[in-house]
Image 1 (cartoon, each protein chain N blue to C red):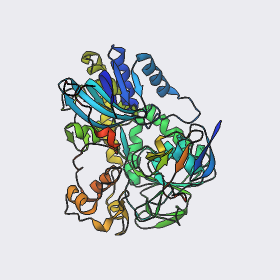
Image 2 (image 1 turned 30 degrees about the vertical axis):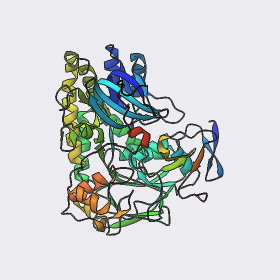
Image 3 (image 1 turned 90 degrees about the horizontal axis):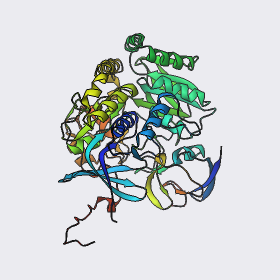
Image 4 (image 1 turned 90 degrees about the vertical axis):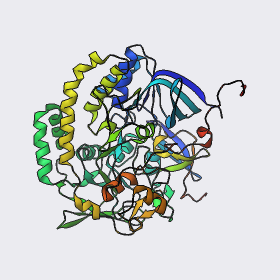
Length: 430
Length: 85
């Protein structure tokens, strides 16, 4: 199959808040901007459109600004490979119509984040879903009316997702936050310094009255016959078994770093290193949003605006975003400390608990003394379709292993997508 | 809201137009979306295209992530746990 070619001054990967803000800012300066995203709609995870409801608030304002800016958006488009030649950077993108070679002078990575899942007995049962995962499924039309849901995990998503489930008619039987009550309280007090976050928190609490929320509790085991039916929760001393039709779990977010790693961007402590202009260590490549460190939608918008302006050489206009960006990065650090994962979570997986869900590799197959590469070679962990996107961060937490080297293609791809287009030289007449 | 009819492992099903295939399968009570290597049932986990647990065959194309595809009228879906396999 021959690839079609699309050209841009700036290519942006990811149409969440960071990618949208960057695209709007760059396109408003007259640059030809093309944004690609694998989802069927723009918005990323946080602004994912809810079935049958138009976007509201900041999401609506930014989506309208994006549309006015003239940036081209390609949804349902997955980047599988990238390379550089003497004419610039090339992204190989699988789209519905076939492969597209997106050529650009500059590239902006806004690849977002995913949930960190930790293995525990029963976590592979159907209807054990992510916390962000259930939010995404609800927005995509999942019906939960009358069901009993338990949320067990960590981070600021637990409360809003509990509110979403209740609004959708589910009975939220228990919300277990693994962080200690002391840490969560300290974080909640910190919110007073930021009124918008406080209003959000109050609204969630209001939608939340009557639901048992316990900090310092976590899921030890999910049980059921071919589908989850109950979950055993613990605080390390006591246990409680709760009946449920749906168990939502997830231990914070981890950046999607496959593409930045493949491009050779410097990465420190699990995040892409950027300078004040959101430039990565690789020439002509910028990065904004969660890949530079988990920070939430407001920080992603600021970083996106800085990156978008700097990618069209308007650094001076970007400077007004530096101070608020620094404040939000500081707050993100406080959040990371508040929701730090407790050691007990490393001991949840039983020897037979599946760790790599694609290849069915149980916990007993791993030796803590290995490197991630050895784990891959000896057990096939990380070699299935998700390419270690789920088990990689879990193994990193369990054994302290760093992420393994990323190779092309960065996502499962059709064979014809892997074949590079022939050079249009006289030896290869069309 | 408008509904569409689609077919899962030979059985006609209905869903709200615009739902993802993953949500439509869950709403239809189809929790065994995929068989794991050891034969255990698997179903959507991440909801956002990361985990590949919801992969199904859609209109003859294998390994589509059900969470990233909106369900459409007349769509033919095959799960690896389905009886038509």
